[in-house]
Image (tube, rainbow, N blue to C red; front, side, top):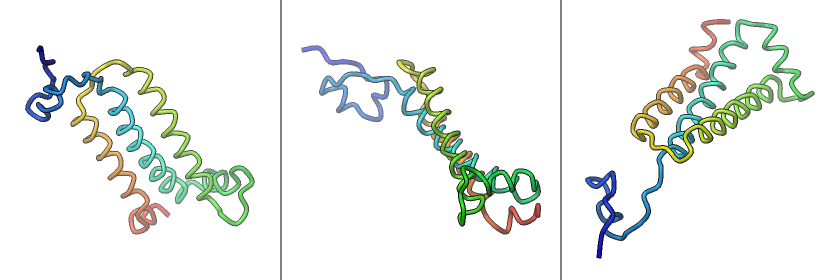
Length: 127
């Protein structure tokens, strides 16, 4: 019986011993980075809306959302950014390997920056 050599043999040799197929890492990396882009977009829009009244007004009137204010526009645009980024990266990296540790770090940094940008003591500095 032949066993497949798994590229992450040091991490999961039992998977290679089971003969499980080696799948590309690109789609998973795309999901991690896209999640960071979505959070960062939300934070960036939150901060920009504090000192750019034109953007604040646009986000408040986004899709005719009454009573919600700019949150509807910010969250909708952040979701669109997340989906577009995920779709594009998943298509580009389909069938390819990508360093998952690097993708996790990129997503984590973008997410942390986005969280910082949504923190009121930070974004009110720009008001």
